[in-house]
Image 1 (cartoon, rainbow, N blue to C red):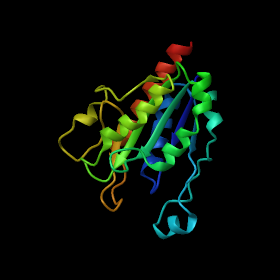
Image 2 (cartoon, one colour):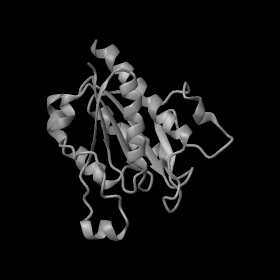
Image 3 (cartoon, helix red, strand yellow):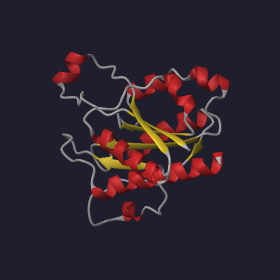
Image 4 (cartoon, rainbow, N blue to C red):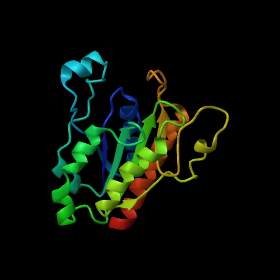
Length: 199
């Protein structure tokens, strides 16, 4: 059975929700899916004071976990148009896997969130995807078979590079039905692609 890891960092729970939808899509395509998160690097007292969502159910990943999956879907919010330091710090520790070629040929994908429609979703996806390309992974985006990303009837995330959501300046907006469907669709395509590559 195809094994998929949904690896994420979520400050306020938006990316956590998207990770769950990505996993749903991959499972619907017949994959075995694990959801894990990267370690929080902000001191707990500061994180509590800033109202970080610290009660997330997903276990904390170890770098060596990455080698055990056929596909890895990485999700993280936007920090000034790029990935946050928590995800970068985790991926920076994967040099040993890179040196061994442990991720070569595996399927990779990315998803993200930002406060506003123009807050850096696409550049953050690129910052995540660049890491996956350096690892030798085959990239899967969010094709326009997810028609919801073309909607002009409401504020909606989504890009051909990966699923996205808009959180609002105070984090007040949760992922919409269209955005969650985009995440599920991307998870499904990731699992289908990995199955074809590793059948």
